[in-house]
Picture (cartoon, rainbow, N blue to C red):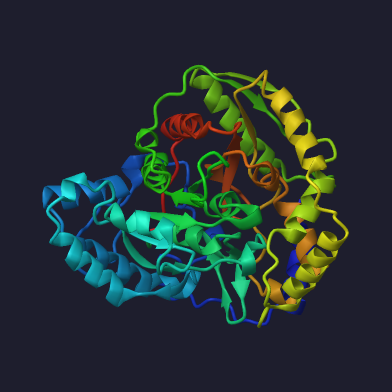
Length: 465
């Protein structure tokens, strides 16, 4: 478990940025530890009312609601975009979710969209989205725009997608539920933007740690599709249905747009970790147990079993070291320059051979002959403090990453689909808890269907706002 006493002491010694401002009138002002009304196990009736008035910074609504409003003519794309930009202007000074906000381009796109005659044929008509990659000419961004989505900005990521904490010189991306905590990474900005209610859905290139770490940190649904889907990146949303809508567009798979009940699944509850940990936070273990109990209530067969990770830890480190080796490394923090140096050495020593990865996948395939899906804790501990992790050494960052986020990299390593599903609130940090769902390649539809069942039977509060 992440050692809170150590974290506080380290933060006192190393933090170089001032605490986020917290005017009393702002919804993110009071740390959630002091806010008893932030009950995240809350049904849809607790959600704020939607408003499409131009410039109104209220809740963004669901992507599906926005599409219906635009197609029915009860809202214009310009009104939707104006609301999103107002929310970003009001709130993002606390979360630092966005690196770039292109208000002019978003407004122009909204005007152009309103003139199109085929709005009814656009599955994401008028939906404001964020992306975390350069959008000029990018095929994934083009798919979103072709479907009617409006890109409002580019969200923050950890450098080169290497770290499960999102910070950079001059910017620390904060958790909307508790701004003293981080938003996770690699796609921390995307998760913070959705959880803060700035946009209803976000695209995330999760890097080695996937979108599931930040989704778990920020209490949103996050799905990283497997290798059979292609290079789409991941999806973060407040609901499973919205995530499915976006994934269907990114993957050009209309069959994924409406999650269906997955039938009666054989599900393993696996609480063992792929890395040797001295402690795991019991509240995160309980989150996985809660998800298993809800799945059982939905009619699935659930039994506890240990995942056969074997020596997969010995494959994780070399792959992580070599997952990003750019030719040029200007202006990167020391932790990442050290990481890249280790990666080049590992490549020269041929330490990245796939034999260990192939063996690990073979063991898991044999395990999944008995099961259709697995439930694990999404994290081993709550997100670390929101601080300047890029000022700390490579080893300190690695220790923190391994202690709080050991469960997600395995599925990225072997290219299998996996999702993070919110499962309550941590009583000490007031940040979300979550469980992870994983399945063999090609089973994205089953994970979406199972996630939708968990959401229906154990609903969560969608955003901080």
